Length: 119
Figure: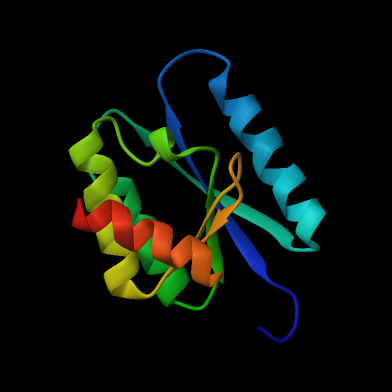
């Protein structure tokens, strides 16, 4: 990808204090990769509404990649996590799971997500 990669943070909040921790992981991941750390979409509760907002921002060309702290921050339940992964894959949205380094722009990361979706 030419130019600066613009990253969007996706955070899911389950308790007090987790917002700052997720933001720190996001900014550290962006700094380590030389990416521009941008805005955030925050999910409170369950469902995929926040993911739809993130997709709109990426499709509008405002961001190149969505960064999430860990796989369990994708959604409240395992089925919700799989639904979010499938939604992103179908939309062609690049995802970085910061804590484990899974990047869907990398063939290994893309294969890992594909294997999760076929289980």
